[in-house]
Amino acid sequence: MINYNYELDFSLENEDLFSTWIENVVDSESKFLGEISYIFCDDEYLLEINQQYLDHDTLTDIISFDYTQDNVISGDIFISIERVEENAKDLNIDFQEELKRVMIHGVLHYCGYKDKTESDEILMRSKEDEKISMFHVKHS
Image 1: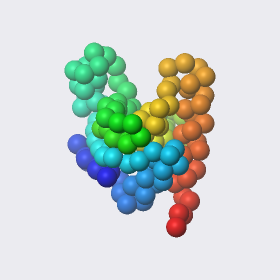
Image 2: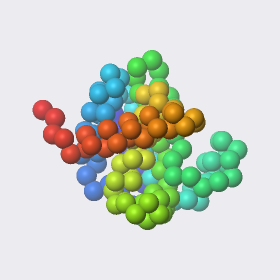
Image 3: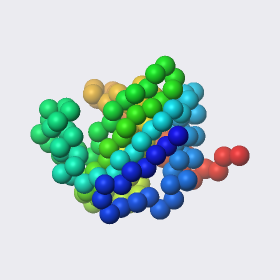
């Protein structure tokens, strides 16, 4: 099950399309979907979480709390829409594409992908691109 929560004036245009995509991504990694909750918020909201739970005093686009057990993917993914908008602008890419990248980034962490080393980050970016390309694919 995928839940969407909005802590600001923003909402996904088609939650069902996003849910189907995420389910397909989880399946493509030979994992099972447990419960993933997306919480869309602003910078201030996410900064407070970053300070309180991670002892970091910096802005970020995503914080994920992983509750995955074995091959059942579960967790809470907090996304700052302000950061996603700023990143998209800085990278000169479409907001929706950057949003998909950030949304799937958290799921890929739950699937076991890391991004702390340069080689891990290269693999993560490759996986993000692969999974974003699945967004428009129709599955029967």
